[in-house]
Amino acid sequence: MTSAIDPGLDLFAEIDRLRQQKKAVILAHYYQDPDIQDLADHLGDSLELAKRARDTDAEVILFCGVHFMAETAKILNPKKTVILPDLDAGCSLADACPADQLRAWKAKHPDHFVVMYINCAAATKAESDVICTSSNAEKIIRAVPEGRPILFGPDKNLGAFLMKKTGRKMDLWPGACMVHETFSAMKIAALKAKHPTAKFIAHPDCEDHVLALADYVGSTSKLLEFVQQDASPKYIVGTEANILHTMHKAAPHKELIAVPYEDRTAACQGCNTCPHMKLNTVEKIYLALRDLKPRIEMPEELRVRALKPLQRMLDLS
Ligand code: 13P
Image (cartoon, rainbow, N blue to C red):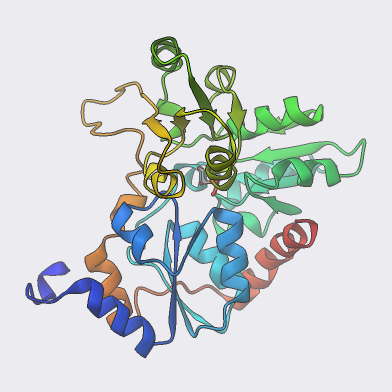
């Protein structure tokens, strides 16, 4: 695919020219590679990027994130062209709970209220009562009428964290984030002992025994905010390691340590970074803007069903 690019091209200048010419906005998640974070018009967590996508007056949304994020932008903004540099940029959580499996789970629990993490496909969203992200999940769970049983998915780790936080019992779908699941509690404890002034801050997608070591738990945006506002000189950052790039820029005087992980597979070459996010590259961003593809498309009937629980989330946020 990249062989079609003239090697003499200044891709960053071309991306700037094309984004103006095509009236495009580039949205990027903190888990993207540093170069991509730096060229984005807006950086954010899943909730902030969904709101940016909803509110933009650009004609084209180039989404630098994974498939469910770009799909969310399309659900909220059907008239706009939404492009994702690599359509294969998926998510282990989204893969864990396809719509037909959620339908079967619901059929066994017909009286339950279904709360789904935004990390799922449009067809799964369409089967849900409300969507949440890691930054508004507690609020969303607290808004479910008292006494109504809850099905929560696809992230069992976020679900377990929310049960502790809210005291609400929920049935959890057994999905997990392939990145957050590799973090090693033993290695984190050893790092904490070696750096006694460091705080361990963690994303709620981490496993329970990892969260038990955390001084602070929050979404990517909340972790970024915490590092800027908190007084400690040092942090061990318990989420996808590319966020360290923007954290360094936002708090240059702080020392940041990427979370240590278990090398569970022989091929693991940095298991605290997301292999799906890595599929988006500067070359593919250039091609996507030049050709206005690959596009996110979905049947209108599905979009309308997926919009309902998403809109409910935005109304509650
Ligand atoms: P936030 O963007 O809500 O921080 O979550 C990122 C994510 O997808 C974690 O797996």
